[in-house]
Length: 166
Image (tube, rainbow, N blue to C red):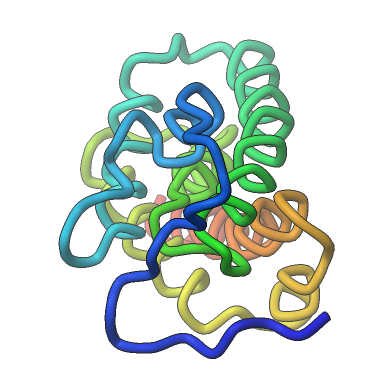
């Protein structure tokens, strides 16, 4: 099965698909993914908000990351069927998870969190190996896995930067 060719126009939802409200709400992070420009950047900003709200407990943050990966994989699969595309731009739950992974166990304040935001966006865009291969995994797992790997790279670079500047 080949991927549809993407066009500069926004994708049209599959008219045969009933609107699956809850999984689309998860995948778009409650509508953030419908931002008219740079939805991934808005999704990453939403990830900063989630990080700020979560307790600083590594256990709670790890549980949140795992839970977001699980529900994001499900929501991402439903969104791919609904929008008729692989990894539709409206799906931003992967960016929320990516920011949480980037910040995981990195003791930072808001300046460090902003650095994490920019590092994650950089690695999410350039998708270094194996991130570029993980996005080829089937369905929502591929949607989530490539951003997870990009976030691991960003986490390590942030960790190194904190070590250098301390």
